Length: 298
Image (tube, rainbow, N blue to C red; front, side, top):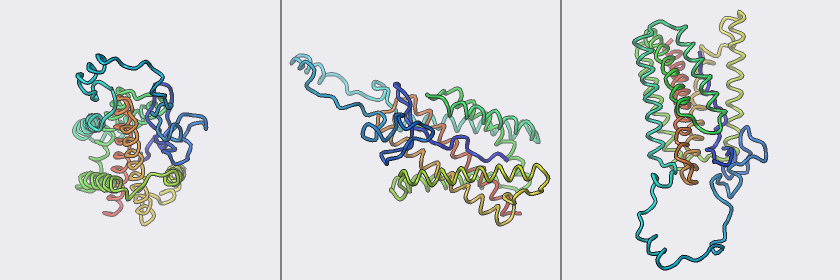
């Protein structure tokens, strides 16, 4: 079963001048997947949008008339500055998750027992997600395309689980909401702090998690039955719990990314990247909880 987030390194929001990596955050690290010289949070005072210091006196002084016009003019707002706001992030995230829900409805009611179609949709969603992950700027069509195909996969899969374990999808959705709310509270209360060490440990665990899943799949595919036993029993429960914790870890990176982007004046279009990251993390958590509930109820 597909249960891996295709974007492990949460790259930062981009600037018009180039790539900004999310690896440093003012904590002394190097952006994930970026060369040491790439622009990142460790430069320009830890903010990828901070400009080089400028002498405020190296321009001609304003005339009294110009100053009066400036004071009389309206205050600059998001629409004028073109900078990302929390409202932008919420709206784009709602659009992306709404598209996922539409896909789920189609998959649940229109593709009953079409497991092959579901896995085909999952493959298309994975490809679209990877294309977006390696693009310099967010492409809304790619993000919404990923959302609809991911939704189709989740719809068919959720119906399958619901028929085998009645109510499992609803429990997984409630669990996903609870994890999201808990992580948001922990992040806002600064119980969890996204530091360079925190990111390195989390990424190392995530890579090991996916490698273990790949090895388990290979063993199962070549006749080892249950593979390494990561999908059943006590080991399966532990592995699913680890998966949920990793999903929560990715959420914390998303929150940090959004906070830094808004504080640093990221372009408004980058709210799509925030929505994309949040959707990936939530889908990851939902799938791991769905597996966990199935194992527990067996």
